[in-house]
Length: 493
Image 1: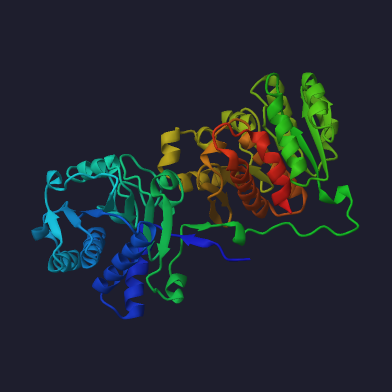
Image 2: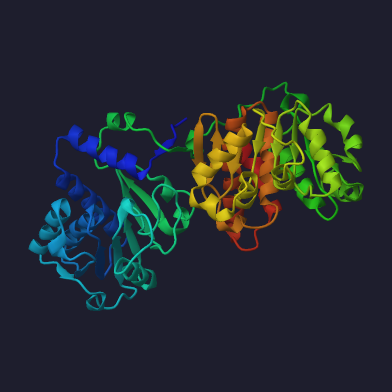
């Protein structure tokens, strides 16, 4: 099993820069030239037949990388023009040295966007405007340059990070939308969460020859897990029997929402649970038996009727289709008093946020699975605040409620006592109803198969997203949650 990838803050990467130069015994301009070379090589590999290059350079080290790229393009006789967002006379240090290098190679440098010429489909734009030091509102001429890049018809390469994207949080207002981002020294968290996945395109990492011991001295913000670094379920013994693999109870499905609870039960069964029970409104029993007769469906009209069903299960998942009625609150209150591990989702989270049921409860044996809106309600804030720093928001929910928190998104964050993990899995086609219900069932099934909560959360998020990717092979639009069920079964082994 591979180790996860560390993701760093902008300040931590600057520290890596400093330590790398000391370890390599080279001046900073040499590291800048390595960065420019790495980006240019990737540019040529991706777009070998590009006709022209337009480079947009800021006044800092990110702009210096851009000047190096322009110089290398001139050496290859590729027509190249640089827009100097900062007057070259005001450049200092390495940025000035890189500018002078570009000048020696005969690069055309202009200081007005009107002098750049057209940006047609044969013109590649290189974004080297802001880098990781960006914060606050954009001002002219940077804002105008970003808008021009966004309107260009050709491909876009971002140097280190798309300008306008926050390297620490992944939040963004006006920002460059790149086809490829070549990032250096350390992977930045903002590339992989929030708006990052939508703005970065393909992310390519260039370590620039930094020795491994340098990384040991700098603490990352997050650990990013991929398929090779996530613990899987062990093979089943030849003499296995169903009671060894967990009895899961799904609680939910108020009137009009029966499908959500049933999909959670189906995904739990497909993810390998030995037994699956469903406690739902009586009106949903016929559909449950027809759709999935393997699920033991029970009619429940009150919290009192739920009570005997809470004795047998190893794991209880509550929330899919639960609603917010008095019936819903009764069921959640009863579930919350059990000693079984819990998976809490959807309206169970919304009821929890209201504070009338399970007020002030913190548990080490539950997994909460909010999306951004539910996380905002749990924290008593709005979604803008949550999205401004998703990592901090996930950690805040975990601090308030304990256990494990899965904050769902393009870069799903898993907060636990040991820190925060990130998993990029899935696709935009999964933005449809019922997908979260499947995840709830998968998490419960994996806990029932004896994975610790954190490991169950990691594997469930990856498995859910990868099943979505496989199911989307025929197209993302129109992808239904139930399309993932066959793939969940194939991937869980």
